[in-house]
Length: 74
Image (tube, rainbow, N blue to C red; front, side):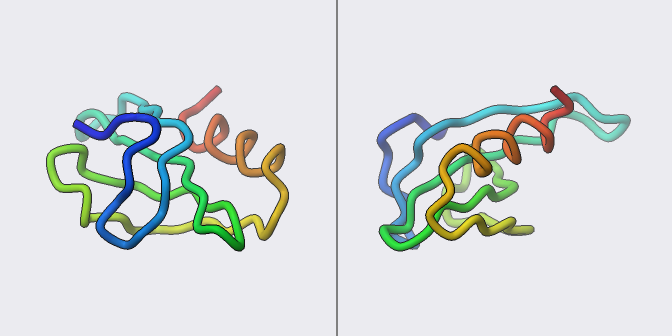
């Protein structure tokens, strides 16, 4: 499982983790800090190196948080 504060294999720090239920099962997403920008990625929580489908937000943490919630259907 991926936890807040965890350093991913790509060097990004996880700030938040969320998920949503789809017709194909549960999808997981992380909000991460790459040091110079915030990003949300889809991820397999059993494989932290699996980050994909990134949405990038430069230095706008508020927009990144909203992006995470949007990706999770909130």
